[in-house]
Length: 467
Ligand code: ADQ
Image 1 (cartoon, rainbow, N blue to C red):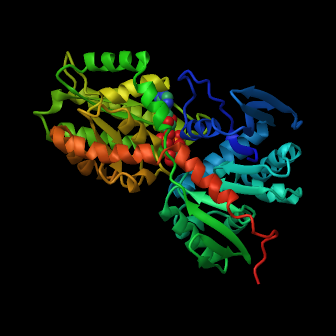
Image 2 (image 1 turned 60 degrees about the vertical axis):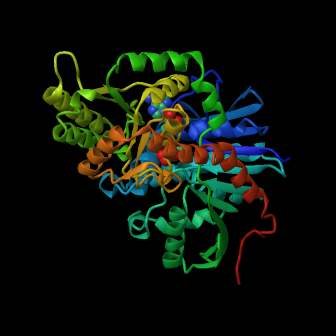
Image 3 (image 1 turned 90 degrees about the vertical axis):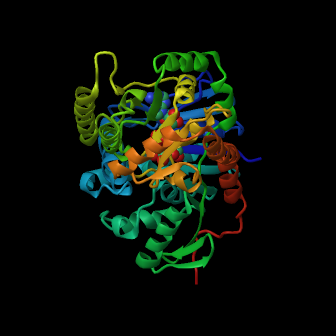
């Protein structure tokens, strides 16, 4: 078949030894590329004084990584700026944190142009191109301007916000119009797809031509929902590894006569960590008899440290965890362990496996892979309980989790109580149905569904004009 060219902001080739770096997108793409010979193109993570467009090429396990260095100002305006100070907060409904700055907008356009110019010479006529995430929305537009006619798909890993939220973005029409240069745009859930369609209907003189085909700005675009999954097979292998077993034994040993409640997230305001701590505090306040029966472990490695909002959240969480431990700890026990570091994936599998409750309560999340990893890591004969935010894309596929409103400490506290009291038959029943969907709707199913949909629509003429 044709080559697959994957484009994302960062490129993370799999090391295959469980040491891959943090981030759901990297995990998913590494798994997706395993089965295709192809190229993975993106930023090298390095900066140079002047942009040269020189490529760094490396091949690992059949996957060729082609990366390019950017300038410091690109990093400020494109990555830390437009991507992570404008689009990320806005798309996660944090308009209050979104910075609107024309320099960011210019930097975003400039880097997308630079990516397109560097990538274009690598593209052969029957390659298919799959672009990922909010950093690169205008990439197809820039590639088309250079005469690239290949099929190009785009997948958005984060939520698509409601129309009224989206229109807070200055120049929102230009951004959305650029999406019509793709052949296919994929979202994590049908709700995000619908929100996108509603935007196009209201702002771009749009109409739905048929399910999955929308007209706007006088052009036609295929759209669809492609919920991302984990590499369930690889996870099953990892969970049996010696490291995973050692970690599970270690965690079991430090929670003798107690239940472990675990949260694992990048340190990000969208993950609802403060609200989660408040929910746990409420649980401890309202259930004195259960206090000493639990230990909550929250793992949250720092991310995007150059962005102020990320520096502030750490300080607030340090304060909250100190308050909770100060109030409830005893000489031989403290209720909350708060850890800011990365773990190997096999070690994480062991930690999840030891936890009676997986507490996954983002305020907004495109999908959330931690929820799926927690389920995949459980012992089928004595599985733990997943508590999941209604506002994670994963909630739609995981109705057998205990679904909560993450903004309500009372709901979180109630769910914790219910999870800890849940008898084994109910835990097994819920887990069995969750695990079936995690296994069935895995990363390979996601990749295949998207790539098939992208290849399967060759008839679309370009430029896509509709009479
Ligand atoms: P993220 O916001 O990064 O991904 P998520 O889907 O939960 O969120 O993925 C996080 C990944 O990082 C998981 O695989 C997890 O195991 C790993 N991770 C977290 N903490 C770690 C730690 N301390 N050590 C090692 N690994 C750690 C974005 C979107 C999500 C969407 C994914 C994929 O925000 O909504 O699910 O992309 O599309």
